[in-house]
Length: 172
Image (cartoon, rainbow, N blue to C red; front, side, top):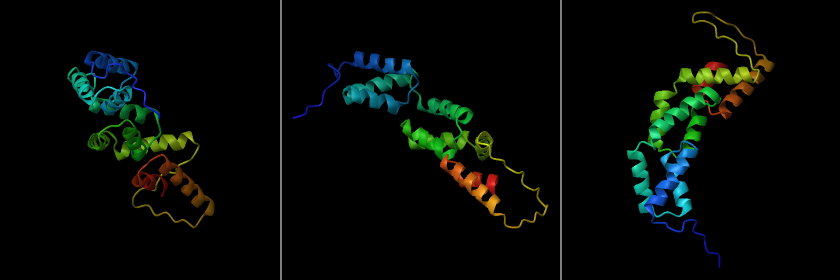
């Protein structure tokens, strides 16, 4: 019969657990959820994991809110993802849902998302025509080529997690 291997020889040793957690954080910034998962995989007891995480929070080595803010700024600057794309990335980092919502609400406005979408479309070679000013009348006849182009842009933006409101402002 297969018996799971316990990777730690001392699952109740708080000093070793703390040392391991600090080692993980020295490699890269992590969320509470990521550290928790790594420590569980390593075989530490729940009590020791809770104590270690609490100690790291008190020492300000672990702070999910600050992590989320930094992560959001990096994603906005270097990745071409919309609201839902970024939300998915946050969930992969095991951040609490209420924290995800508040950070996105405060740090990723519609105008930010439009700028990122324009950057993506420019990078991929799509051309966006300026909208007519309010009061201007624009008459269009149906243009199949233009319609296909708009659909292609729309699908591309949606696949990258942009909100429908952003897609509508840029395409239609």
